Length: 304
Image 1 (tube, rainbow, N blue to C red):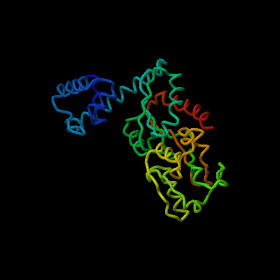
Image 2: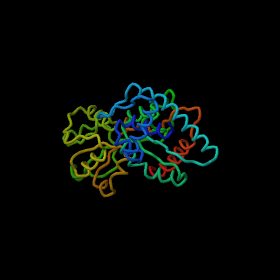
Image 3: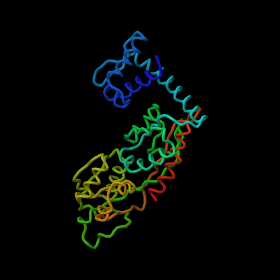
């Protein structure tokens, strides 16, 4: 048994699918299956049941527990020696929301790669809750998400502040109301307009529903989606009013599309912090703090 086989098994256990695990590892399914079979032969027991989704046997769950700890210590050792020798290699696993990733990660990864070309940045994109879980389960090294200011066992650092704005297609408004840059505290005048809403589990969707509820009207909902890019595309086509973090709107929509909308800012209750979160460890890999440093510098330029 070797560390490579442990890595392969851990990936299979995480993906619960041989095909997806092989794609993640950039190897063939045959190679992956051969490694798993070799470990099973050495341990003299079955570790997986090839169902859909794939299941671990009881022995597989036991091996997963030991392999996670052993491989984690192995990775920590290499990270520390890479720092000692200034010979940085390896994979930095980062969790982030899909739309936020689209908006801010290309420039951040490019800047990080310029400084550390031998580090592969691997993104896990998911919901805020799934990212918290992945961080706790050691599936990722760093999460970029909404975190409280402190969390047991975690280091939390401020990244930037997101503000949710309201985008109104200009064609929905009378001509005298089409100028941008307005502030608003009461949505009651928009009760006659159509809306497109995000998921009630997403922060911008929650803010939208709260604002509408406080205004005391039942919205005319034309569409709902958990995908912010879809919502913005619908808004750009004039389907309805959309609530979206300003940084994401400006990253996804073109200037021409934004110019065809009126942008409303809220006086209160529509902003929140995006933070970095990573586990407190006995040894902290330098690449985590370096990515944070570079991202803070890069994103400040992009957003402001």
